[in-house]
Amino acid sequence: MRAVHLRFDYIEVKMSKIENIQEETRKEIDWLRVGKALLFPYRLVIFLMFNATIAGLIYIFVNHLEQSLLAILFYIFAFYTLVVVCVRIPGIVKKVKAGVYKNQYANAYLTDKDLRLRISMYRGLLINLVFATFKIILGFVYNSSWLFAMAGYNVILSIMRFIVIFRSQAKGLNEEEMHHRGLESYQVCGWLMMVLNIAVSVIMFMVIVQKQTIEYHMIVTIGLATFTFYCFTMAVINMVKYRERKNPVYAAVKRIDMVKAIVSIFTLQVAMLTSFTGQNATTTVGVQGDFDTGFMNTLTGIAVTIAINTIAAFMIHGAKKDFKELKANGE
Image 1 (cartoon, rainbow, N blue to C red):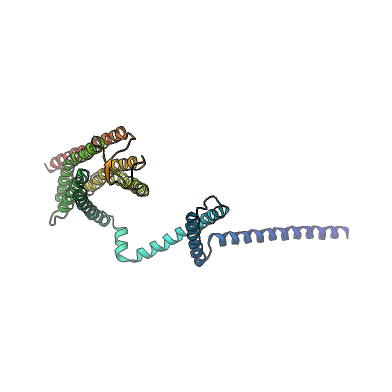
Image 2 (image 1 turned 90 degrees about the horizontal axis):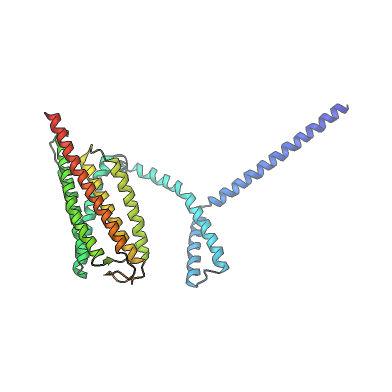
């Protein structure tokens, strides 16, 4: 009997431990539910939180309460709202992509690499033409040689893109003839890059010697820097992707994009050095302030011209090499 009694005590202890484990598990599940509710509230709640955050921050900044306890509480609430919104972003992106792929035109654009590249060719030509026209108009309005030089730079880019697009439209040619025609466009773009370098050198002369610059508002400059570095990164990726000249037309377009991104780095540096040296932000075209930026602009300018000449020489030499190979195979 004593053994049976001890056995029952042992079973009761085991059952008690099992109940404690189950209770702890229920608590963990409850905590998971609480965490999920905090990170994934209803859409209406997120909408109200977002608007309350904006209204609260506007009230704090308008009334100069940045150092108050209310401001600290609102900063915490704003951070929480930002986390909630960011957690929702992957799901939103997934739904948007699913909806986009259902559209036949969007699906064709996203899945057809040749179509994307061809559209990028026309888009680049349109952007360069718009910028060239805009700079010419501003050049007459402000009587600025700087703006006319920038317009000339964009005109040369437009000519290069037009040549590539025009010569890629030939019909009735076989694959070998199209490749030969593409190599001709590739080589011509290389020579035009040498001409483009002259226009870029004129712009650098105006910046370094004549001290002419374009000044933007600080916020505009930061936005311009973000966009420029994005374009530069994508240009490097695409140039590496199309480095073998299997399709010389697309390779030429990506090298044009690379040169444009390199020149944008120089103009961005000029804008940043001008905007962050205390010059009057309302001046559109002016003379640099007391901060000496000539040395930095000179170094960057030399690097840019060397890079453009290197890309141009690479294109000319590469086209000549491929022509020789085609001739040798033809014989």
